[in-house]
Length: 163
Image 1 (cartoon, rainbow, N blue to C red):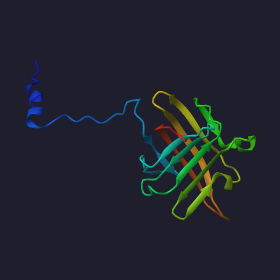
Image 2: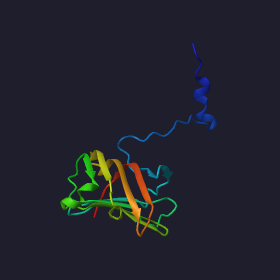
Image 3: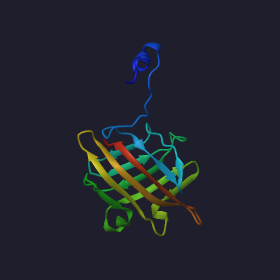
Image 4: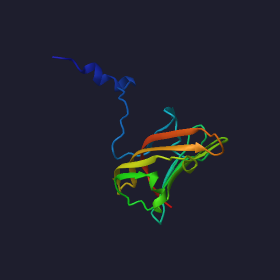
């Protein structure tokens, strides 16, 4: 028989057992960003996901080291508020789906690339709590000749605000 008395006395001594925090599926504000494979910290208080009255979904992912900056913005026009993959190659179909990135003096756009593969995959929608879950990936090119190509990707479970 094991003695659990020492564990019961821990709170009386001001000590508690620590467990790692595991957010529940109902929590939001989980956001990751990688640029060319390198992780970049995000600012979850400045980042915003907006759904406009015209059903355009705008993801604005802001870097932690530049909370007042623009960061990455992805626009998906006519978002049906359902799980699915929304790709940037559909720009020519009349739907506005593109990405832009600004950090310091770097300005890059998906439309600046000769080929602008990118997508947002929505894997979960919680209409009661107003959040979306999924992944994003896009390529943007610095504006001007000979600009670098940047691959931005990440995951999210994030609240959506009405615009």
